[in-house]
Image (cartoon, rainbow, N blue to C red):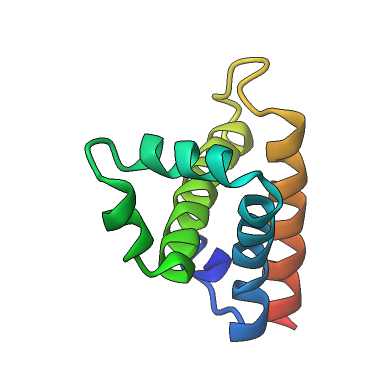
Length: 107
């Protein structure tokens, strides 16, 4: 996914790693909190509709949304157009992870 976001190739194994992190986070939450989070993501959806969803596909999509947002911020910072404080410490960590993945894929 990093390669696609940066227009470069990436190996399939590395692309799935962030998805597992999101899935682990949701599994660690108490069920009512996880349900509330998912209902916020899908306004108007019932819990039965959410239960019928492909969770792994959902987790991948949510993580890609986050990666796209962070990649756009990274580009602003690289161009010197990012205002101070635009990128949080967690987002900088994700950028470093994405940089490492992109470098590993290019070797």
